[in-house]
Structures are given as C-alpha cells and as structure tokens.
Length: 104
Image 1 (cartoon, one colour):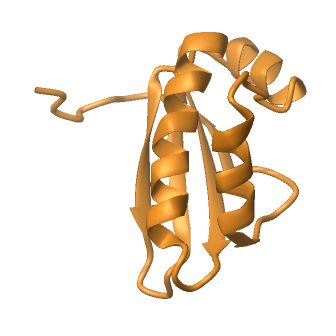
Image 2: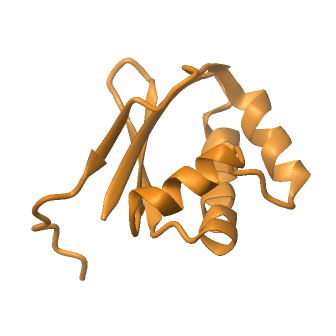
Image 3: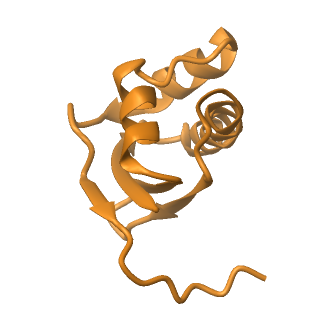
C-alpha cells in the first residue's frame, strides 16, 4: 500500500465548503483512479491535512500525472475557491510497511 499526504490552508469561513468538496472529490478520485480513500485532518493552526491511501505507487503516480482531474467541475471549483494556499508537491509520499489501524 502507498500513502500520499497533502495540506491546504483554507479561506476563513470556507471550511465547510472545502470539506464538502474534499469529500466529493475523494469519492470521484476513488471511482476514476482507484484510490482506497482518504482521511482529512485539521491541525490546531487551521491547516487541513489529507492522507490518501493507494494500492501501490504506480496507481497513485498515474492519477497524480493526470492531476486527478474528475468529471464534476462544480466540485473542483468549490474546492479550489475555498483554498487560500497549497504547496506544489505532496507533503509526504510513503510506502506502508506495517498497518495496525483498526478498520471496523
């Protein structure tokens, strides 16, 4: 399994819009590119961190190279409009070596 982590700073007052667009975008990325899903976290400073799981690095790379574009422009627009700052590259790219998460 492969994990990619990303971060975003969101415009004040746009947090709910961002989270809704992130949830829908994650579903669309799962359907189109084969991700295993993602978790969204929020740091104390307000920055959001998304941690996405993929079956392998090659599957992630194919989606990343395609800019994870999906066929729902209104979701993408809502996502982009909510973002105040985002880096050019993922925060972390990691192979999972041991997984003890309880996924009940």
